[in-house]
Image 1 (spheres, rainbow, N blue to C red):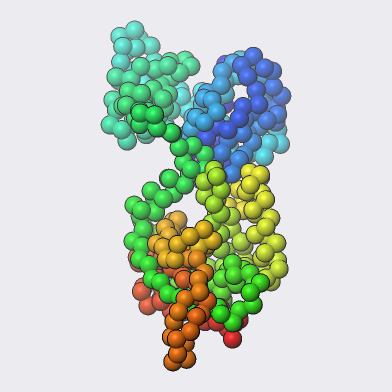
Image 2: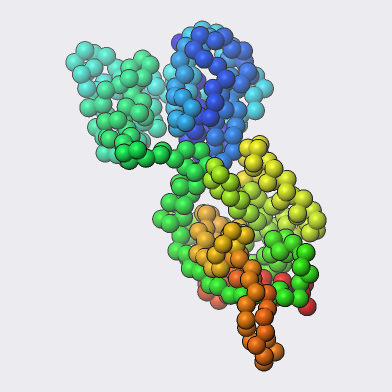
Length: 371
């Protein structure tokens, strides 16, 4: 028997959610043949088989979350082969990891049998303050699984009749929790007059270009911040994460080096992302590397907001609903077309003056087009 653990998928993530199995118990599979598709960071990744052999056990079903390094598939037979699989990282067999940390616990100690717990399981037990000696093992070869620990701690309980978050919504919930816990967010708002802008102008593209242009005036907003080590990293290239609302949840594909792109190229890339996100074929690399974000929530409703920043970024610009409003213009009352803007920034890494100057630069860049 050989156990194949969920490998590091090259995204630095602690777990992945099973989306679809391509095999079942009893199937014979060849090396590099797809085993399962899993969802990580809003991207779907196929995991190939590391060997040729017969499937003895599948750890988890569709919708279950598997920790990186935890058992995924158990093979009944077959030799490990080196293939050309696309998964990044070392695909280690579990026997080495298990034998390294064998422990005698619970009633098994009285029977002289060794129960085994993966590092991820021990970490969860520590987090939930669970004594592994009291947990009943249900995994292969008397292994304590994550579900065993959760069941013992009561962590697997859900609301009566409630819906368990999965996939994109689960990833969103985790990201927003991290944002709330780690970031000292502050928001400033203002309006920019686009009355003189052509009616058929692409306001989203205009905003994206203005955001990139404004970084030249105030580069501190195009940065990542490491609160643990108190380190800030500024970027010259502006990579803007564009929030896209889908029925499954929120996706944020990244427009790379947007300052070097012309308006038609930006629109084409946005349309391409819409299609790939809708079809769930968006590449994982297209969801990574953002240095600042834009949330165009006004296409639905709302004037101002306090959008949340996803670490390690330090800023996100929100665009509210464009409205015709009565304002004072050139000393007279007039109906003008206004775009409400909300800039949320991490006050640990960005000063109020820097944020205000950046927002002013965005507004000036937009006004430069309309003047």
